[in-house]
Image (tube, rainbow, N blue to C red; front, side, top):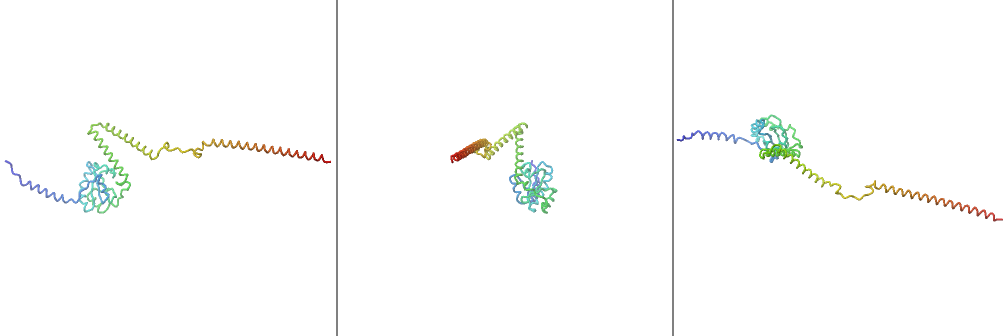
Length: 279
């Protein structure tokens, strides 16, 4: 014969629900989760962001304080968020996370690293008393939206993708470790070869080599050495012509002198003969 159910069980369940309802509705804000897709929401408004990892003991100790601080987000007019670096490696590289946990304060796109005590009271005082104004903001060169940090984010994502592929080769396909390394080495050589060919093609298009350029006609200015023998030959011809003209001039002068002397002799002889004929 079945025993009747105790009436205390439904009453106990009802009491637990009633006690848990005020706690559920008493939370004023939740911790928002930031990913690679919505991280640009941080550029508007005021934020406090925690970078953590589930395996980190210090991050685990901080979680209750962070959740309690998030309850004050609406009163402080601030958004409280968190980033799991194991699931978002791109954000880890974009913000240069070198220690865990790391807390950032953001106000209208200006990021400052929080380095104070990690309790709910200290977080509240940091926002309410505007202690963040005494901290130097991160330079625009190293800001999460800069080209440098975007490249760093892509590098971190690539490294995580390579790690995922490595685990897939070893665990799912059953390849040895050296086989996985060989695959990555061949892929690196192939990608480098393709990249080099693309760079050579672009360089040849932008700056064509001299072989493809039309050769200009040779000129005296472009070929001074080849014109020097011709100039020497011309100068020698001119010098020979000058020597010939000088010899001809000397010959003419000599003939003129001989002619004048013979004329003088003839005239003197004519005058003498005429004087003899006179009585």
